[in-house]
Length: 362
Image (cartoon, rainbow, N blue to C red; front, side, top):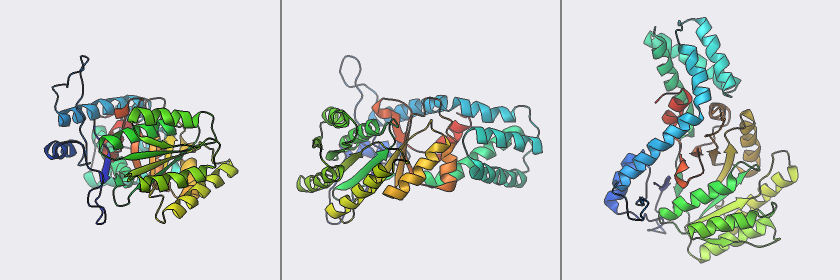
């Protein structure tokens, strides 16, 4: 298991989110996970004793297993695009079939047009004549298109770092908060949860369950105004010396104007509690929603000024091409992607890995 955040130390707060692992283990883990700072927690075997696998090896194995599930989740898209190259000639018909496959993968017209133009240039420059070469060049084009989305979450410059999380109902918002909380706590961060979702029944109780599992504190007020809960949480986080305050907001559709206005209000109130807050505004999107996910990103960005995305449920029927559309039309960084319900199933986004999975490559 590894933590998927990059932390910085402030000149005012010289020691903020210190990792639990020893420096040597931490350094090795960082190398094993694309140089992302990591906290290593020993795995346990069924008997309860520590497993023999070293922390860096455990992180690498978890990542490899997760990549396998990501490829499996995107198999429908990968097979659809890969089939275009089987026994194909490098001609206009290939590009036309590829255009159809990318559109069916929810890449959208602007991203598809960009990818095909880029691919033509690459094929011409490389003088590629083999379909396998062209497929490899498409993987490069996809990775370059998605590269602007590859950015780590930063925790540390602000104390506490206030992270506001939004999303539509059913996207997996609260579960993602729980997973993120666990990894932050494993990295040595003191986390405070704010149950500002006072709209959905049992939302506070669900977040309280995650707080209990992760052994972190929670600010929750029955029937309170969401903005008031968020304000109190920031004040409490500062008073208690917390490193991170995670604010859970109500699930809402972009068309629910009163709830979108409420989201904007929470952001304004957080700024009153801390003039620099929120330091991160994350949107959780369901990978199965296709082009609607792009519409969500645009709408929530207007209300909350998004800084990052969490893409969930890529282990289902997700097509995945919507990330190409987001990269082309609204390049909000993708901090994490998820392909399952386990804690380690939420991992950092890699443009190259995702491009390969999208094409069904190992």
